[in-house]
Image 1 (cartoon, rainbow, N blue to C red):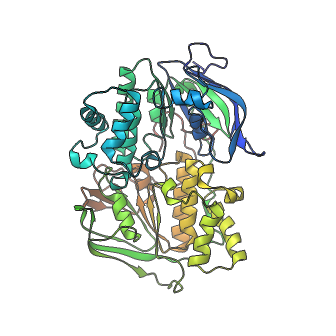
Image 2: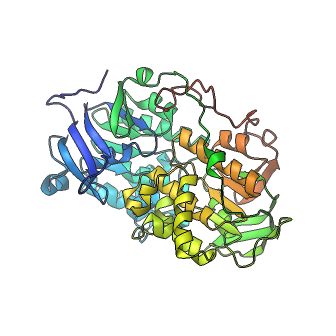
Image 3: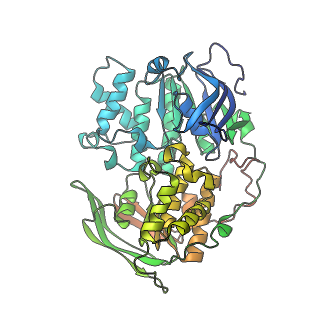
Length: 524
């Protein structure tokens, strides 16, 4: 069934001719988008990073990213206009619940986990009794601890995957009539992502009168849950209908621009990263225990494990952003020494692209800081290098003047990567850098990393939940669980992780349609 163009009086969501674009003119972000969603239905919204998916989702809450404006069109949710402030007060919380793709941004850093979920429950279900019990039930439903110690933690004291599930628990509180989920599984390992699918499906079965807008890069998730799908490309709906119609395998030509993009790249050099007996704490709790590993120069090591196993804490320790309670972290020069005083040896590309970037700074400023401060470039050279570095990660020079709030989640993550590369590091620690990207662009970013480490001798530690990425791009895999290394070896030798793919090339992949979106089926 195709999304209705005209809609009817029984629709919970009705969008007609919605166009969003930069204030004062410029290329639209959404172009004449029209769709309708009835109660009891699930609408999947798919497309490449930057295609306008999140902008469409935010419009259902009456929100527009800074720098954008509504040029035309209408939005109605439960018959009310979310762009009207009085109507929005009636909609937000009680009728519409939203979970963004950046869970850290949706959680209040000053409030404890239990308080955040409890507040969501009180807003949507006034007069609720035994709130603590219901909070524990919500946390248990998303596979989180329910003990008092966990409820008293704040968002910065949990892993990215745990923060994602806390945000989902808060969104599910009180069973809103419309649930808008933006990339609900992006920060989760394979097992938890599957559990999340089952959880969301179960909540839909319990709440048959509710509706959901599901934005995802995961075609399996959308195919499993959605009744209808719209495919966005460059802000337009280019296909709509049931998942079996939209996810059509047509093949796609190979696309690999990474090697060309590295021409003229900064001549950084690699180094062997060595970790010996490392331990780390969050407060009084030890979260890493006697961790030892070596990442040889010019290679890629994948760090895998379930959410909450300590992967992000280890990544932050390596970059000097989290205190080490014991042990050592060191790097040894490659054969060609790096010029003294130029750049930091280890650069972190964080999982949380929102928290990693200053919301008040433009992309140009974010890139110029390491180019001038760490590499000592003159202003003119730094400006040219900032533009070239942005091109390395597949972004246009026009984005240099934008701020993080004006970028899509995928664009922010690539700016994050560009800023790290601007420092010409010896070692790059990448924490779930593809979690906010569709698979096509995620593969392109990982291809780029492969070219960089081969041409520049860059050493890479890739923290990932994606078995295919670990198998394809890593020279070795290290599995972390409970803050300890439990397995290590070449891809294919670590239990639960697949054999490496024969080649990084994606040519001939039958699970791509003409727009580049994966078809329903096992991608890679």
